[in-house]
Length: 222
Image (tube, rainbow, N blue to C red):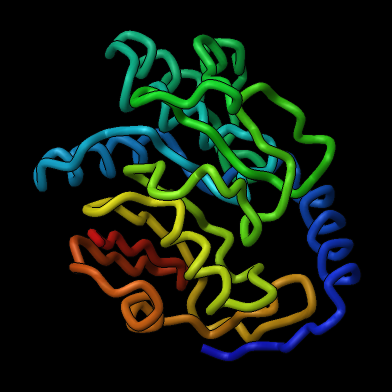
């Protein structure tokens, strides 16, 4: 893991907002990966909620997790049918994915919510803010945490501690990351390996997959 040390907090936050605006329509997660995560978690008897998605941009990944973990098979089949690969993954009928969204103001065992730094990402299931400074009353709140944005951390050690603070004992971390990419200003953490996440978070390795595009997923049970 290589790190660019950014001491100016305001410049860091500004760079993260600008990057989110540039990639706002981009969703790296697709419905098949969401279904695969659900199967893996079922196999290790993990409590399924509440779920937290960090660095969620336009929020599609929140919708995917909510529908896969808490909705019926018909909705999931429709999402799969209408999904297209464009700017990552998107839907030609996004309204299907949006039904039954959770509320940040009322988190329960079937809630799926997100945190996004971009002020344009306003939704009732999204907290606008930085994923390294979340509400105090979120201590031990979430059973599952998903993110593919860890490389955007200003300080990966601070970020890891904050993420561990908001998850409960026995929680699951699902983390996507790009391999073999040097850090730069808007992605200050680079050249990540799965062992870096084990060192930062601890826990039990449940799953690791490295695909041919140098993008990986790791699942840890803490």
